[in-house]
Amino acid sequence: MKATALAFARLPKTYSGLVALHMPRPIHDKVAYDNAVEVVHALAGHKLNHDQDDYLAIMAKLVEDYESESVPEPKPVKGIEALKFLLEENDLTADDLGEIIGVNRSIAYRILKGARNLTADHVKKLAARFAVSADLFLA
Image 1 (cartoon, rainbow, N blue to C red):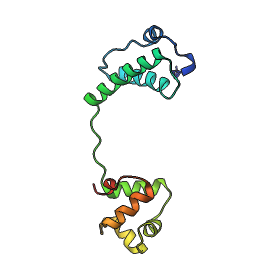
Image 2 (cartoon, one colour):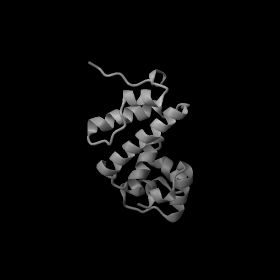
Image 3 (tube, helix red, strand yellow):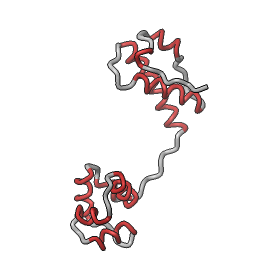
């Protein structure tokens, strides 16, 4: 049997109705977490009335508390890995990288292989091109 996702249009409009649907309680396990996240996602991004807004705030806080206690912090991404990801996501090649940072393709390939480091000028150009913080490439 496949579970159906909560639809915003079918959610109660009152606080008591929302509580009857899903009682706000501290989250202690993955199942309760998944259920709370489903409720938060169903409410988020919609024009809410006061009751719905209050309920969403409480549910989001419960989810946040569980995540801060139970979900490990992601490992920092190395700058070169972030660069490779951005290139892949934007369908760009090492040749394109060379054009972006103003070097020949041989140097761009060496940067991607880790045989050569990015310079401060390269980092500035990459940050501007991808609209990200320069710190992303310095890790």
